[in-house]
Length: 393
View (cartoon, rainbow, N blue to C red):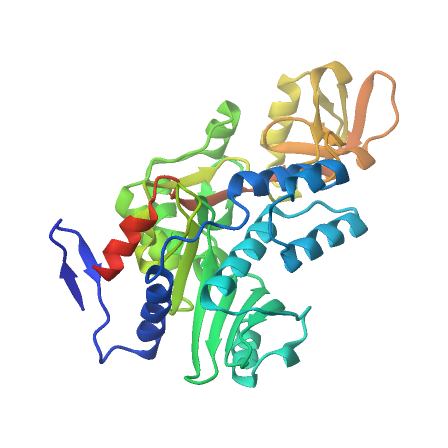
């Protein structure tokens, strides 16, 4: 059921006969907006600084002054230091948001699950297992009748809330003020044209209309990668539909993020495009995920223009002065990981043969970045009162 506000905007309302999913979503939104705005305990700007300086104990100590002790944040930092890996920015945000939602709902008991389902009610554990989600930590009320669990898993939401008394479960997605609503790898052929694979159709059907628009526009990876640009010529409705359909499973989902004043806010998943100041579709010509080279003809052409040669046996050589280094995206700042041949191609440092003036490597050791498609929403201009008035007035 829907009705229109005085300002002409359409508001979603749940009538008494609505589903259990609608009732619990509305109930959580009321608990969020029936009280005054709650600032996020560690705002995005401070989280970014923690992410940047977490290895420096002196700077980290200064950053944490005046902030609450958040057990999962402490655990994430400790684990990153022990393993030598980078602290994941997204995990940091998830820990903070879960802590703040728990505080808002009055869930004060912290439980470290670390993959152990026995810390959860059986019905909740069953639902998590069904979605291949592993519980990381939980917040519970004193009576153990309400649970908020942060859980990880491939292509899964970020957390869920469960009421023992009503057997109601609500899925929760966390989004930062600049958020992606899914991202999927794309493949392309030797001419740079996109391929609509069966795997993509099955796993990422919500992106198919966007992919169709790009293919109809004769989008070419090689053209855009040569300019080191991304493609974002999509109709607004196509992007909006992709965002909404991103949440089609599970159907019972609300989104938490923070507004321009760093206040915690929530809205129904279907309203994600409505509350964004801007939505945008994007195809990255060079995405995040590499695989072994698969457009050899284009590589040889690109390599030759840079002054490189490829022998019939696949032995590649090029003067060192022609290429730049490739640096790590995480870990120790400035770590060289390889050589960059173009925005698409690279070779890992460990695959280079010793030489004083040239880079020597085998063609089989070349990696290529796949393209990716994503839909984005921007919430930096959103205000707590605007969302509150939309749902409660």
